[in-house]
Image 1 (cartoon, rainbow, N blue to C red):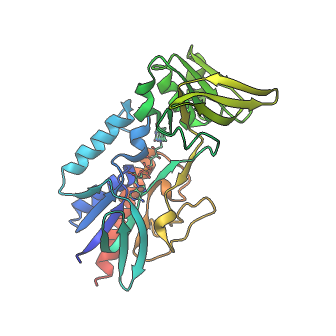
Image 2 (spheres, rainbow, N blue to C red):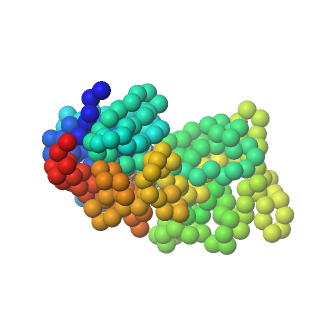
Length: 303
Ligand SMILES: Cc1cc2nc3c(=O)[nH]c(=O)nc-3n(C[C@H](O)[C@H](O)[C@H](O)COP(=O)(O)OP(=O)(O)OC[C@H]3O[C@@H](n4cnc5c(N)ncnc54)[C@H](O)[C@@H]3O)c2cc1C
């Protein structure tokens, strides 16, 4: 079996940037990812990526992809890494499609949406219930929709949906919306967004597709008629497959300033790590650092 210099897991901003740096260092490497663009592709309006005063998430993901395609980068798309372990001097990666070997690894697998854990969530997933407003929002033109959550992800989803849907309900289980003031202000300005603070979803109901939700606050239970439910209650790191790599209590991979993990040869970058802020530009910068660290590691450890 071929032994690569490096395998990069994930093709979000961190993994794509790492791949561009690895290509420019002429490493023999692969990128394995479930998708291209990661969470950046789910964002609505992006106004904080330097060089673009305004760009949508899907457009930025497209730009990243075009940049990547300028190099001869081998990308295994729609492939999920299920296991990463060390064997002698090499790392073994098992995916849902094949096995690979590499001298070093960059984990850039980012985060995924948390689930609500209520009755009806699994049953109506992709039947009106979704975790991605950018991907699925256009399906709800002139319909009533509920966004569950009260942070930036929920506000971003609500602001995308208020342009498409007839009515948007935000169901937030704390006493006031969180997120950035600028986003809260835009939500307040929108004419068709109603906020239910201090409310919890207790079930999602419907027949073949979602027809409503039951929510509960301190006055009791009420029914809301909606055809779409967007779950935006936060994210968890995609780090289950990483084996012996050290993580913090949130499941984020611990790294040092050089993106090294506790296992020599395994580097990590972006949202899957314990870097304090989770942003596209930070993930991209961390991806470049991880690739340069991997390059240095490979140069020193010639085996
Ligand atoms: C709705 C929303 C709006 C946002 N808006 C902004 C914004 O305006 N500005 C900003 O700076 N940031 C924004 N962010 C945050 C930003 O998108 C993230 O910080 C950034 O995308 C993190 O990049 P990443 O590469 O670390 O991880 P991700 O973007 O999560 O990418 C991870 C990649 O790994 C792949 N992957 C995961 N597990 C596996 C596996 N086991 N095997 C193979 N591949 C795997 C995924 O398919 C994906 O391609 C937003 C996030 C969300 C959710």
